[in-house]
Length: 113
Length: 115
Image (cartoon, rainbow over all chains, first blue to last red; front, side):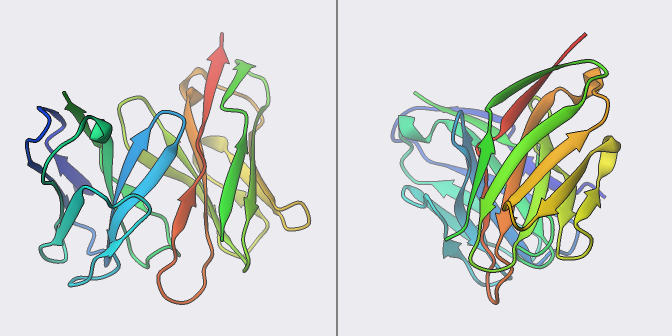
């Protein structure tokens, strides 16, 4: 089992460019999440998908969109990147929403110039 | 609303000394509580979780945590620190109520182990 995989690992964007972060899990989990991690702020939830076919906003959704492509895949899109979106992005999945542990991918480090 | 407070953003201990990382939570319903560890340039990994069974929870790598409802605490301990324990540790709470259970993470505590 690969667990949760994320691509790319690193990305540099110019302000206004767009990109999609990819995430896939092979644990047959129902729920998937996108977080951003910034120094001194812990993890903040951007969007989540409680089950296939549903997505909802988290704590900091502005400037992002998501797609739950199927049960395995959950992508995060930045339509017009801004320097404030420079961060480390983590995808996670879990079996039963918040009741069980979340399994995290290795992260994507994004720099927006 | 649920919240987590981790006391001390940085903690230093000597190798072989007791590790104590503090976590206090706020939740309107019985909580589910988690400790995660993050090594440099990696994602978070689950250390242990409390889900209303035994109040003393044992996790991986010799860590354990005790749920104390009266103190709303879930502190993480390890009797003897090892160099490999140097990492960032996150406490998290989920309220466990029906529907979607949001997980709230603390801001993290960086553990330094001094040889």
